[in-house]
Structure formats: C-alpha cells, structure tokens
Image (tube, rainbow, N blue to C red):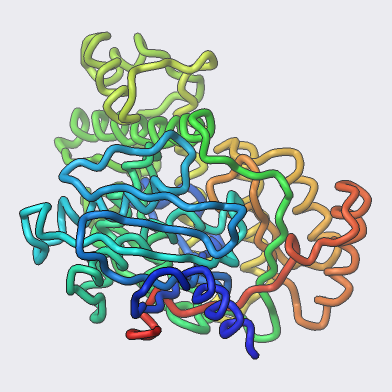
Length: 461
C-alpha cells in the first residue's frame, strides 16, 4: 500500500464515527527558493509547492458548525460556529488559520448567500506531512484548506485559473486575521503551482510564471530544529519589518512627490519605470536621498514626511495594525530597504539563471540572499547560520534560510551525485555533533516541485 493510501486509511479510521461521504483534499506546503520578505512589498518571489502536504477528508454539515480533528490524536481537535465575525482563538492556535480562510470567504466570495443561517459548516479530519513552524507554510496551507472546504461545503468548487487567482488573493488578505501583516506568496504558491516547476510570482496584479529547475540537482530541506512559533513576540518581529518597509516606501514616495510630482507610491514594489516614468538610476538615487542610513525615530519620520508627531504615530500604528510602539533601537528603515531592493534583483536574476540552467549562478544568489536576510533584514539565528555554512561545505551549491525566519528551515541546492555524501556530512556535523540527535530523517530531506491544492476525489465513504 502506498504512503498516500496509508494516510487516507488513517483519515478514514479517524473519521469512522462520522456518518458521512467525504471529499478528499490535498494542500501542499511550499518552500521559498529565493525572495524572502519581498512579497508584502509587492516585489517578486520564487517559491515552489512541495511533495509534503496536508490530506483532508471533509463533509458538509446541515448547521453552521465547523469541526476539525487531526488524525494524530496528539494534536487534538477544535470546533467553532460560522458567524459574520468569527471570534479568534487565543494567539498561536492552529485553528485561527482555518478561521482566517473561512472568514475571508464569508466577507468576500461573491456567490455565497449573505444570510449566515444559509451557510453550512463541515466536519474534517486532517493528516499533515508538512513540518510545523519550519517556514514551509503549514499555516497558510491551513488557510487555503479551510477556504476550499468551506466553499465546497456550500456548493462552490475551485477549478479554473481565474478562480484560483482570486482565491489566492483572498486567502492572502484573510491570513491577516491571525495578526501577521504578510504578503501573498504562500497562498499563491500553494494554489497556483505546477508539478515539476518552481513559480516566479509577481504582484499587483498577481501573476505567475513557471520556472524549470536545473537538471541534475535536487532541492533539500534542512530543519534547524529551532521552531519559529506563532507567538505574539514572533508576529511583532515579523510585523515590525513590514512597517519598516512601508515607511521606506512612504519616505521615497514623499521625496518623489516633492521632487518630480509623482504620487501613488505605497510599496517598495511601486518603484518601477512603468509606475513612475523614472529610469532605474533615477529611482536608485531617489531611494538614497530619501532614506537616511541611521535608524528613524518618530520626530525625524514626522519631519521627513511633513506630518505632525501624532500623525506619524498613527501612520506607523495603522501599518502594523496594532497600537503604536517604537522599537528601542528605532526603525531600521535603511537596512530593510537595502534588503528588499537587493533581494528583488536577486529574484529576477535567479529566474534568468534557472531558465538558462545555470545552477552555479543560482546558488550564488541563494548564498547572497542568506547574507542579506542575516545582516540587513535580521531574520536569521545562529543555528540557521551554522546550518547554511555546513551545507555549503558539504557540497550544496547554494544554501539559505527560507520562510519568515527566526528559526525554521534552510533550503539547499545539491547536485544529485553529491546527495549521499551531503546527507551524511550534514547529518553528522549538524544533527549528531551540534544537536545531539541520532536520527535526522524528519529534519533533513529532499523535496520535489508539486502541483497546487486540489479537490482530489468526492463521495468517499
């Protein structure tokens, strides 16, 4: 019996007390090859969906209750009622990701009834092979799964590319329900991926381009064993960088308005010739003049933006969707801008290198990306730095952190003929010697590009 059939059997046994005929959903995780913390700036990314996924059996109910259980009893279950405004669980609960997708569908999907009493909840059991808190989007996979199961339970199946684009965009908006001010990479990769290819994703408007990976190489995931928990502290660290990037865009936008009469700059990704009419050289000069190297505090922000202190505080607070709190070290606007602009360029160059089959050049961009994430965006940790260094010495052409950072995984490009020795060396040096682990199969593994989320089968007993 194949692994998939074993997992389906496990799901059916976990749902045996429910007298339903089920639909089978598959929602993949994703790994971001390059383009970290660029999506919420409307700058491109280059992820791929992977063959680690969530399988779920779901069946509509006759009432407004949503009941979810994990096939692994360790994770337990949860339930909640549909409402016009669904109350969140406590911060960090995995149930909030289901609520996020469903709430956005209730708010935004046009073909649903407006009357909450006309909507149907569902029973669901899930089985996941995506490592949690690892930077492989297990949380966004839950958002997408919740949205798809809710729509299906109410008679709406996601099939054509237009619906998938819309759903990806709405799920990205909906995930902010959980408190993170992220972008749209995870949801787009999960829904729009194609087997065998990575996916270059551009935003505003959302559009995708398949990108082939170089022949003779595999993508390897290495978990640092440091989990990046969905705590309030981690969310604030993530959201702070979103705020600092938005401040960079505001400062440059104010400069362009004063100097050239150009308005409408809301994101770093708006700094294009098409949007502004300026050359790349002029845009680079504007960024240099508009954003000073030293950290910003509210008085200087207010002065640079031409607003009052109170208005500057309110602006920063609204960007973070929380009460205004100034960091002790000030807003590191220049560092964040430098990371996003250089990472944007690396994404474009990486897509070109991959199209040309140039694995060595792509690996160099991966390594440069990790250095930028570490030094400029400050989202790495000692374990991720150690793991990337060991990976390169073990034969990885490129190695970098992937995901939000603050722990989680690295993504590594390894030549097929080096795989065995790579696994051996990284296993011994990092997992056994550094972490004291005797088994590391669940931390160190190769992945392949997979298809996006789908309803695989209906009417399963």
